[in-house]
Image (tube, rainbow, N blue to C red; front, side, top):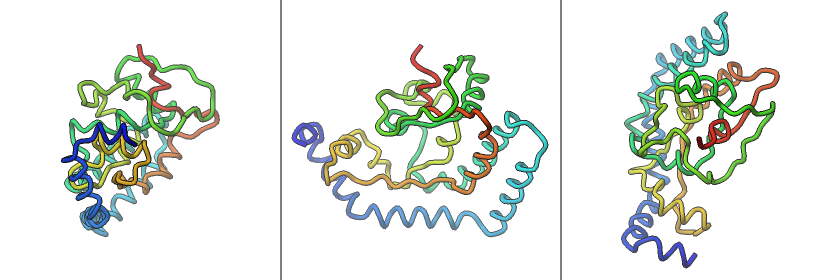
Length: 215
């Protein structure tokens, strides 16, 4: 813990302490605002479109970008109430991003990069990522329009992304009690449709870094 203390300034520790004092209430307010942005009529219409996509007689490869498009609409509604913005790359640098082989092929088609061949099953090792996402360039996502499901689904509901700072990440990894918990929201309503689209016999699950190792 001493090494963490020396790397975090007193002013940052003070800011983190202030955030921790009201972060729970702040997060609840942000989550309530996201919920309020989606009227009952809007939810019903979105559900109908999700069901239509589920029943659509088309390939998984065709359905995946359509699923992403529906998620973008939800993302647009919650954007004012989350701290995730262009240039914030904390998750891209520190969190494993599990994707399916279908998503890996979708990214490959957009980038020209050939994904690694992995055996069927789950290869993802959860925990702290040892290196940034291979598609993070200058703190920007270079495949934003083609980013995978988990990148679209998850977002941080924090006042100013301070909980995502390198300093708070260091405190969290050191299990320092002064670390601020990162509150996240997830587009759980899309989970069943996502599984329906990507899961088949022989599906491969792996961190995006495993599918696309350093060149």
